[in-house]
Image (tube, rainbow, N blue to C red):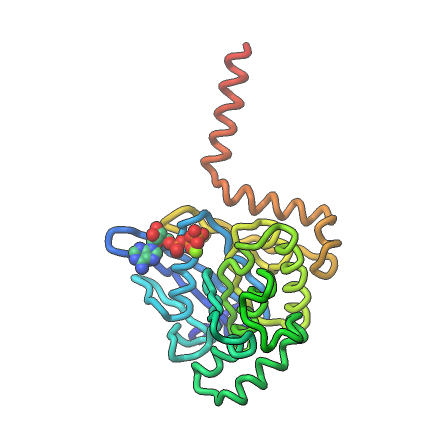
Length: 275
Ligand SMILES: Nc1ncnc2c1ncn2[C@@H]1O[C@H](COP(=O)(O)OP(=O)(O)OP(=O)(O)O)[C@@H](O)[C@H]1O
Ligand SMILES: [Mg+2]
């Protein structure tokens, strides 16, 4: 097997091998392992401040690991390789640009002519539920529409790996659910290779093939949960018993062995004092 080759000898879309990252004396990531197959939807879930956005900065090549290595499509992560499309946690649309010009911005930034960039972004407007809003300005869109526009701007780059950092974090619960179902639908249609950062266990289990659970800082992957599926991703999946069982596995991994030990200690103390 050569560099970046995973199970079966196929080149993995993403391989994070023993990555560590420190900012001065603050150790943020430690021996972090993560691999994602082409066309796989992976979710990364972990406590706030554990290092999820830091991990995305390393994968996109915006920052470099202190130790270990990161391979995207078999080659070391770098901005110049153009393999990663990154939708950062705070994705801002420029208020003075129309929605179409905002969505064409990423392509323009990589040197595509304005007319061609607009044409390629424009082709996705219908699928992204934005048709008719090409000439609107961001303030004229709802929160969900703004997030879809930011996602369109990322997806239109057609990079091998898509990184989505809490894309629906700021939305109300109903809009969030609608956006999750919409993304599930879009993924089933386009089969992008996605890594999604989220705090929402249900979102992770609804959307992903695999859920990578991070420990508190310094973050490492404490568990990799495969999501079993008997049908397509959608509302009906929520009612499957395996869905609740998977959510529980992720929750237990997030709470960690100390949470279990604490619960057992409490139970034992209660039992002892009751006798
Ligand atoms: N450039 C930097 N310089 C110094 N410290 C940093 C830098 N970037 C991040 N950190 C620190 O690294 C830790 C992890 O931050 P990060 O943003 O990766 O967390 P996160 O898991 O994305 O959190 P959240 O879920 O709240 O978005 C934090 O303690 C943060 O203060
Ligand atoms: Mg973050």
